[in-house]
Length: 593
Image (tube, rainbow, N blue to C red; front, top):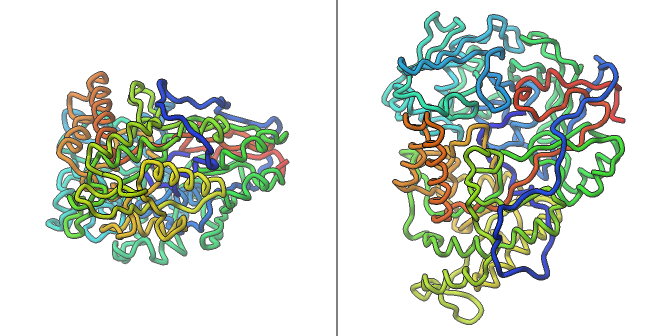
């Protein structure tokens, strides 16, 4: 199921233990996962129309329970509300928009417009029509100056009048037109310019969900994430509607009687949170059909899971990666802009580079990744084969280089630990999320690696952090004093433009800003970028620049995989089915085999 650019619960895709020894050299070739898996599975036999799909959300903390896609800030909420939250547009295997979904979309390059046409039979789960106003209001929710949404990006300011609305200078967005009125089915969006990214889902210039305006119009936008209308009585236009929510633990779904498409093959869906330590045994006991989201079962449990005779493992390269983020600035709450802080403890890029080169990710993945993971080399994952820079080396282990970077930058040792260039004590606080037991050992391994180069790195609060506490800390506009850098992960979405690293992006949690970064990201989607060769060059230049700056250090990539029970029909990772898969999925028996 398709994901937008959204933060994940830590880099739990890494499941490793402490290494006793490691190499001092770098990797000379591009890392690769060793395991190959099929992209789909479908059982033989007829679908049981009364069956319930039993799915697992692997996570070590409760989900927040935010149903509204515009308000969601982590992948867990996106996962557990997936059966109802369908995107507006269907896509092909390359994530290009195609007609036939809840809405069609058409670009007019000369007029600089995108026209969205809703299906006549598209309805909310209460039977009300999905209207043009529902589409338009989503942009108001995203861009309102009082909105708590973290999905806003500067790309949206390419819509005429949206910047003025975002800054509170206008009460409406002038560039969004509803030719047939608010209750019509057509929306025309006028842009300052159209660009090649707009042909692909997840581009950041187009929001791909609607808001049930009549249902929420009396809720102040600043309160939308916590309002009863979205928490207790949410509406959906996907194939299922919410039957029951157990806060932080599970969601239960039944068929949406007003769904525009063919009636869902499954009668119901349940999604339960399962801890990473219990996930493997839960599948061994046949409690679940498959996992949702990209986190899934830890790689350390793969050797046991792959032996299960009643499951087939299905997987593809993730459109995401784990990374280290450095707190090099803060967000100005008044302007919504990220600002660099020259006095940040990690302001020196040589220090950041050294931390990257001290990490032994290749050795970790080789010994403990069970062939599922690899070291990430850039901030564009290998899943975007057209735009990932295959020549980039990233940060292979090189202790000698790390020490030289620190020495040359003036971080001299006094006893065991290095001091700042002006001779002061240096203690760096590292925030990491609580996850599996092997992930805990992985964190201790990296602490040891950093200690080897004389850096006194300590865990924030002395231990790994519960998910919600972690996000409260790293997503704060002004970083806490006890967070200098952190480990997290991205689900990047289906269009590769890295909008999460722009100057005004709330997800730019390390608050890195530079004129060159801004320009390089803009150049990925200027008019010249309709030429694929030019666009690829801009992506490569950006990847090289960001590796030099090391404000965000790419850490790991993995397969997005799950065991699929042999009663399941029509499971696939083909993007062409991503928007309709919950309706297509079925089971041949009442319970997992």
